[in-house]
Structures are given as C-alpha cells and as structure tokens.
Image (cartoon, rainbow, N blue to C red; front, side, top):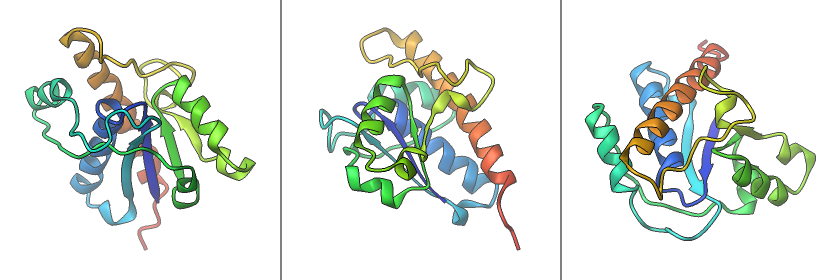
Length: 159
C-alpha cells in the first residue's frame, strides 16, 4: 500500500506522520507492505529539512527523524492508494487537483483516525506559535497515525 501524508509546506505535520507511520510498520515487522512518503501542497520549503522545533519535540519524546520537503504533484494520485491531508485547506487543494472521482476517493483527513477529535477537524499547524503548539500537534499526529496503522495492519494479507 502506498500512502502519502500532505500538509502545506511538508516541514512539520506531514513528515512527522510519514516517519511515525514508517516507524510503526518497521516495529511491527510489516514495513514491506507499505511505501510511505509525505509532501506539501505548496513549494515554500522544497528541499528543506523538517522544522527544527518539531524535530526537537519529537526527540524529547524519544523519536528522531529527518527528511527533505517536497511538493505534491498532481500526477501522484496515480501512484498512491491513500492520500491523507492534515487539514481542510490542504484537503480542498488536493481535491481540486484530483482528475477523477477515483482519484478523489483516495483522499482522507488525518483526524478521521484516532480518538483525538474527529473527521472534520484539522491537525493544527503550529508554525507561527510557541513550542506548546508543537507538543499538541505531535500528540494529535501520533494518536492518528497509531490508529491508522492499526486499521491498515488489520487488513494485511500475511499469507
């Protein structure tokens, strides 16, 4: 299964989700069943590493990750089974880029998964706030990714 997590700049929320999902897949011995990446709807930060504040919050919780920002391309709908938007704005952008109902059907919201919030809620973008916002975002993403992983892991054919 090919999954892409998407936020605006691909430096905070989506790379965190990508790396947490990959971690759970590796930890549970099912990494070969998933190809996971992340992207942004904008090109603001292309080539930059994940935001240092989110990496610091993650590191404080025992989770290290890296990567480089990239922009989602419209033709990627063909390459992914599931495209998960971090908020309604990015969901709308992605939906406008989808060329067919089949491509639109691959879109989901991150907070559809987990017990923190609900399908219509955004994963907050802490970019312009203090470190507390990064802690909150980390916990929301972690909870949602854990629930998504459990849902997808349960459907794996391990034969």
